[in-house]
Length: 358
Image (tube, rainbow, N blue to C red; front, side, top):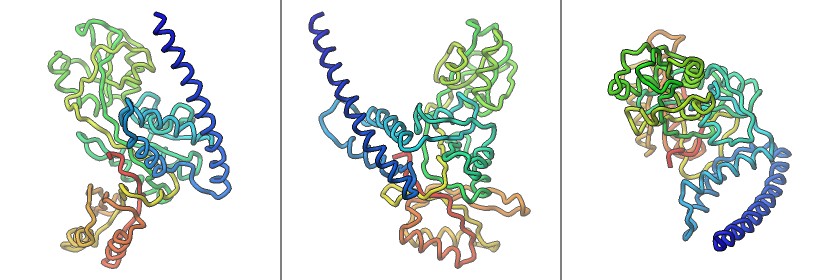
């Protein structure tokens, strides 16, 4: 026992040193924040944060792996940004959604969060400068693209993508009832429900009355109000509304992931590992899309996503959401976009940002 107490004393001494050094770090952070505000520079610098993580993760000999270092320092970064300037983040709510979880993973516990009922509301708040950042889903690897987000990117030209995040989506089956036979209703967002069909079939729950909700968080809330109901939701929602988790990780696809965009009003700095998103409307003639894609091929630009979306103000015409490797300020990217415009294509730059899947 004496040995344990001695070790704990050493840990306490190290904790004191860590806290002292963190406070010292924050003094420098505060000075940088003052300089940024004086010059009008953005507080959030994803490329600088990535550079710090890469440097720390390259240090050899420690017990902390890459994921542990990232988890610790993402919170330090979030605290630092709030010391430079208090942050307000709008996201697709309500509380307890996966978008809420994604937002907190990037902006930390100290930030002020504004849950909103629709994706367009997030864009509107950003466009009107009522918040500095927004977090919205853009696609899921099993359900595909979020059309409303694509439409809003086209509509709100003063809102730009400044970062992306990927979140592993794990659904839980929660209920106040301990006996599955007593459950008469299941609440969930339709997407979450459809992603757990195998679980529902294997536990003979497919015939139980399903009521769709606007979010998995709303489903957890409704399940917290009635003993004979259940919800398919996130662990954070179950915790928020105090509903016991009967089964964890019930989704059919264990690799279920959702991609989120962080939105704001600035352009991120040019660095390696950057992606760019554009909206393109190809000329209305045979082969126009093929010609557009060939321009990127000739400039040796790697396209990572191509998604069509109808132009709602024009009958049966489409715009194309395109992701590719590179920054908007790269010479070959500028060449490709200029050639595309000269060929009669309409191009809208949506943002350049660090690849969140690296």
